[in-house]
Length: 111
Image (cartoon, rainbow, N blue to C red; front, side, top):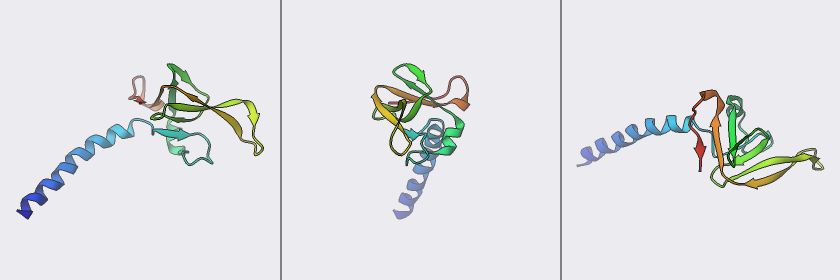
């Protein structure tokens, strides 16, 4: 009986893992920041180019985003804090993200 259980268990994860890996590699992470001091910063992902659509329009001034919680942070004009970092405003609404290097119809990550 133990031989039957061990042969069934390894087959199931092997067939499911390859299907899930490419899908997650084609969409950006749920949270990302362009600030190198942030824990959410990932330079390799940003080099690929990440497109953001917020409330139906493509935006290029996004400092940080979260798809699952539905918010983006944008810079508040030219205002800086006392440490020289730009002040940001958190806006709520539907957020979609995709990698720009995948062509015209890339897979889009949205909530």
